[in-house]
Image (cartoon, rainbow, N blue to C red; front, side, top):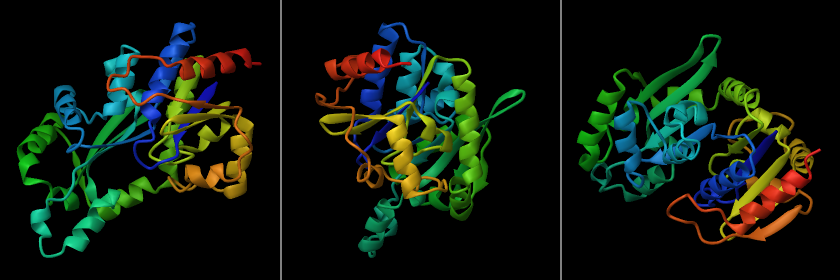
Length: 291
């Protein structure tokens, strides 16, 4: 069984913190659950500890994936939990002091801030990981982070240099997302339940997530539980062709039927260890309706 967690907002919907509550709640009732965040992006400026963890492990590691790995006591599983990961670093304003409008536009452009990518794929002989260094963006990084980022690249040992055009082609290639589907299938074959977390406000992170049994929509202060068939029909109405990262949660919510549950959630916690009543209520509903 698959459950998909998606966010209404591009940033700070609260997907990860609530998904971790769900994961802990399912574990408490004896369900064999595995977290899967196929696409992860994190800022080295705002989430500095991700760089420290990445240097320690010798591979790019996102904050959310690290928390998931801790939750299932398997730090070595990070690459399988989150196979496509981006490190974003803001441009240094010193390069744009006389072009502030251009600087603001760059800060709003995710592709222009990605300096490092980790891609993990699955083959007959196991998992394979490659790191890409986006040279076009790396040369504009914050001066205050030059040394730590140099240490990060050195800890990874081997990176393939690419440009922004190559990065864009990689990320927007539908075949990449079918490769991420293959890792999901791997997890499904080994676990009773896979909990999928989407990226930003993307409604469908990978093609096979459309077949989730339930979809949980997270917004500040509230979560909505939807039947998977309801979600699938809405996606098919909006688009009959999968386009990477193109389908937003807001475009789906406009045409979806009423949720099965609409429940309030408390403010996001700093430490992902607790389980709210809302998470327990959703888990109880799903378990009681498993066919």
